[in-house]
Length: 562
Image (cartoon, rainbow, N blue to C red; front, side, top):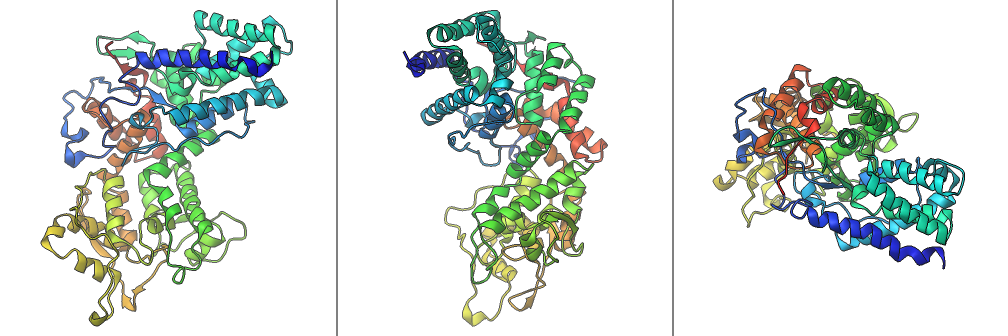
């Protein structure tokens, strides 16, 4: 009997357990109430419509079961194998709900295609482990090929793959499976098939929080290993490392001080930088720029490399700001940039001596996220900027508002001038388009933000003239708490960076991300406390994450009735 003759047994073991658990969780995995509305919704009856009657109350929202996102899956496999990973089949894209994140539980249900690719990937990982010395040494903790070594392997790999120690029953079952393969084939076959089987279980593929102890009739205290997983997947987007698992084993994740110590350690690791980049990529819709084609005759420098560079430049700016003691205000006002030759051309500065060199942009022209090419080109048309797209972005992503849908018959094409009218600026054309009173109810606010970016063309290059006419980039920032008129994007971003509304929205976005769901009424007191701490810390971005994980609610979940 060949090694692969036992594949059916492997599949049955993995998927029988999966089906049993998934059936028990029916109505939880993937959500039963449909998608939420993301972190926004204040004006549409979101979390802000509820009042926290007792600021000291510990109230916990729902904790839906979540499948690992594609990036979490890849990162976890990487860390399981010690960094040496085989080529894996591409997973179906994670569906992203409008205004939310890739880790939203309501969009993370299984599918036949995904399950089949998980199987293929698991088999590839198992084969890689026994054929690659580095991966094998990381996975198999002993050098012999006997039953004792097999027990050690099952116990150690199972704990890392499931992010918790195996129960006695699980250990007996998995070791029994391992031994059946070892005695009928050989040790390597047993390792290979056990790895492949474990990587197809819900304990690996999902972030399960099903244990813990009752605090009261409504709340359950997470196990220490569940807390460790919450922390590592929030700050690293991957499994807990050995030190975090050891802290869980020792019961050292039980209070705010212990969580703060671990959080600061994790935030000092490069994996946190990647996680922060991934959060901002999603929050700020940075992938939009990758799909933006421009008129070649007008913008010959714009191509696939320019799109990739624009995204990378903004992510490097965010990363540098975030981990250098940066605040919300710094995100919107700093003129520091990290550029390659293409970005230098678009910013009209000398080419750097080395790719991604740190430079300072002209503070009269650039400052903060919203004067970067990724935002400007990603929220524009093929030939010119789009005040509505740019204004809607500010309202939805930075103010956490939910805007009403435009009329079904609205004209969304790029406005063009009548040849008989004479020269007109881009702003002139859009003002003419939205002049009817039926448009003004929304566009007064939308374009009040959007017109502030008229100094930038379709690829984000600075301009003082448009179609031979002076650019008017003035506007009025309404609904940001410190409402005021402004001249240009630099002044607008200064207002946004100092806005309590924007700062609170940033906290909402992170809160939504850590919970993997939209904000609920039960979150009101916790969210207000996090926003208050964020304000007290001067909008410090790292301290925001620390304040989230040190809240008592981070170690709790709501009790789910059978």
